[in-house]
Image (cartoon, rainbow over all chains, first blue to last red; front, side, top):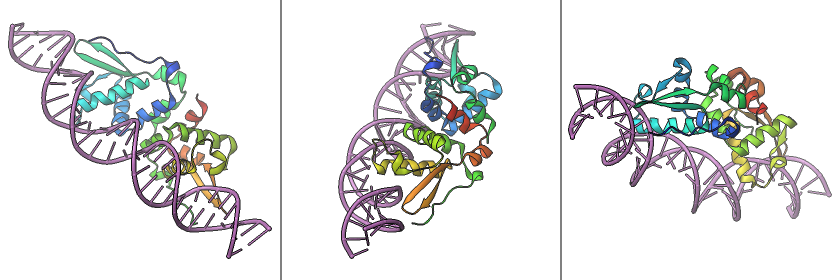
Length: 99
Length: 99
DNA sequence: TGCTTTGTTCGGGTGTTATCGAACAACAGG
DNA sequence: CCTGTTGTTCGATAACACCCGAACAAAGCA
């Protein structure tokens, strides 16, 4: 599969980022990635079907919150912490630190 | 009119707050309130009809982002900065400081 | 060439949200 | 009272988002 397109920090939109984070499933994904650094889709599937997870990863990817690197058959996801912080300083930290 | 119900900080929900902020019109309202401190609904109406504005204020109020104080026929709105910061430290600052 | 693993894509069903006009309610001032 | 101002509420519509199963694609491996 070809590599994904990822937006550049200059094109990140605050409302898009906030909307991406305003969902419990995606917030779970983000929090989990913060703990483990990098994870593929399958290891994050709890009870949800993979088509749902794929959708959530897409939303997070297109908003700029995470990057997906393809490694063979696996898609490795990680937070774009520095780039997000460059554009919206403190935002991710505030969201990850809270309840 | 009777006073509004406002949620207490302990009941603020991160996803609810983020969803409330993930809308251009509401983000405009929040940014404006940050500049002027307190404002009623009418002074914030640009091109949108008042029924739409009333809806956005309701969403912001019920998420805990702002407080509405009734003064005669006017509804005075102001950000709940301290309470929001108590529950989600740094969140509002990150959103208000960015682009 | 099959078989398995990992994700994506497609289609449909369901629910939520935004938007706006029109009607209504509360209050203040004459 | 009557009128103007300020917002809310109602009803309808349209757009969007979430959810999930099923089919598909790509890669690795026997």
